[in-house]
Image 1 (cartoon, helix red, strand yellow):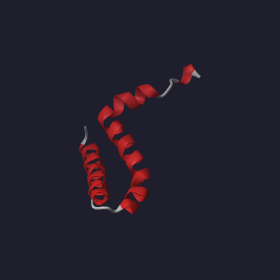
Image 2: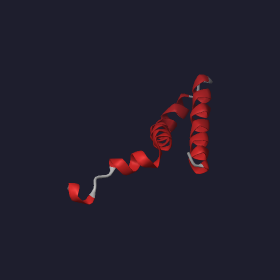
Image 3: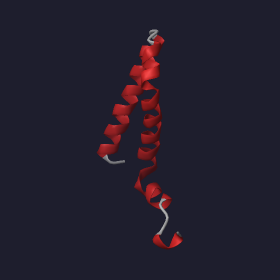
Image 4: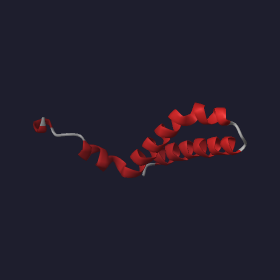
Length: 65
């Protein structure tokens, strides 16, 4: 992983930890506000961990259409 990907995963994981703490402390409004970002967090972590080779293979070649 590049340093940019590591930074993105770190920041997104921090958001997840923060929202978990707020939920444990009883701030249910924080859960409703952060549900969309949780989906984005999971998508970004999977994307960062899979690397660029997986993203390139997912796109069809020009003659495959």
